[in-house]
Length: 101
Image (tube, rainbow, N blue to C red):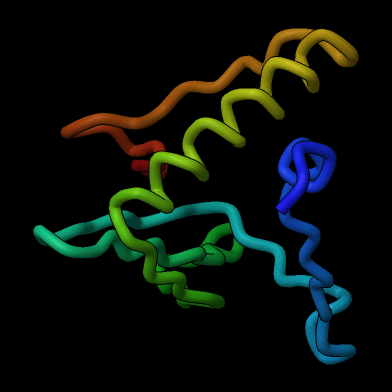
């Protein structure tokens, strides 16, 4: 592999199935892990409801969670530079606010 090819990096073509192009709206997340993987449930809780539904579940290796964490951090920084600081309050024990963790 030439130096030019190494600097270019791996090019991956990502295919998005048509059934997924509209995405899923979620307003909560649940994260849990064991020694070998992290599980992230993307959850929708309708306003005024006490019943939430998992819309999507992703399972990642610890290394890929670190990559996702770094990527989200960079994207939040870019967003806040462009649109202003995101004000977020996470609920805690005894709080009536939904917990994002």
